Image 1 (cartoon, one colour):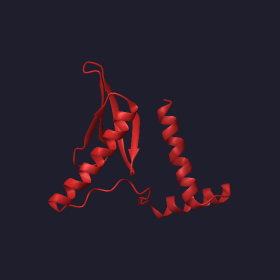
Image 2: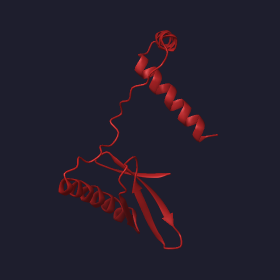
Image 3: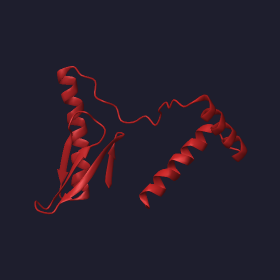
Image 4: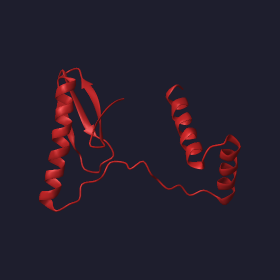
Length: 114
């Protein structure tokens, strides 16, 4: 998957061989925001233009633009799992947050290589 980023918004880019053009869509929005171009420079500019157009449209209709991911999320687990993960992180000499991040990154990497 090819991803470009502008102001925290991520756009997935794909090549359309039939039309001989790259097209993309901003990820993780309920609104549909697209862009296209024939080169990397055009794609980067089109992504920026589309995000700015999205901001303008939201302002026109009195709506707050959806925000890109903050990097934070809450996860509810059982007290037992919470205790076990804290203990595991302590044994490894790292914070619970760092242990969870490392574990998630490892799972994603393994999935990508499967």
